[in-house]
Image (cartoon, rainbow, N blue to C red):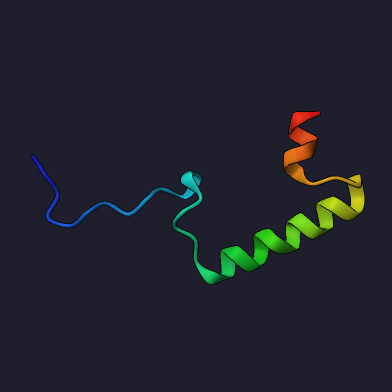
Length: 46
């Protein structure tokens, strides 16, 4: 059974974000970098 509309990407793919979510994420990113001295991605890798 196929969907009439193409499915929107889920939240965890990072493709389908509202403007509010983008603003929140960038705010969190800056805050995280200020606190830990590295980006979340660098932190995850370390």
